[in-house]
Image 1 (cartoon, rainbow, N blue to C red):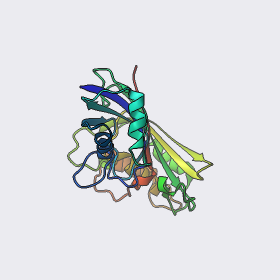
Image 2: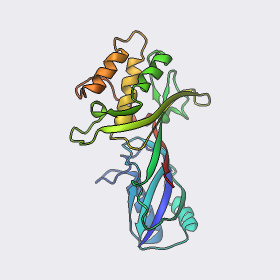
Image 3: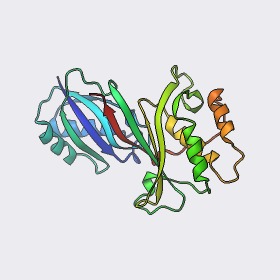
Length: 248
């Protein structure tokens, strides 16, 4: 069996996430179907992040295992030719025998874009049009409450998740002039399902002008692990897996 390390970009709008599911289009299944059609062989994927339905990627990392050997660059070109325009293999190479996308991760970077004015059509699929006025300084202050090691149970979707003590290394907010969008960049080693989107939804709600939610309210929800809070979850289309960085 041959192992290939791949870096993949995709527009997740029309897919039900990365992971294979019955009777719906997913990124992994689309890649596998194209590979089988082009090379007449099968294979299996493991990805660094099982992105949810509607979430995009610029730097997803995956391991593909197959009994078929071909020059990796020639394989990449042929494989890309059989994929829809919404999926692109950026690079691929033979992987070390012990390589696993989940292991030895230094950090992942996710980016979330939101618009405070109606976006141009070319960007609309990649951000959330947030129709409320916000206090930008308060938004930065609220997001800072999630940096460091915390119990994120209040911001995790799966009630059966056992380990919700995680560390977020950094969160920054910048303005993207070309998109006319704000970009929230979140960096950390591991994130749980919907965790980033729930943090961002809660933070934007708390940053609204004249909102009744204070920073202390957010801290209380976080620290008492209030899983029943009613703060919103940011929609999927604004989230992009930007990069996965591994330790040397």
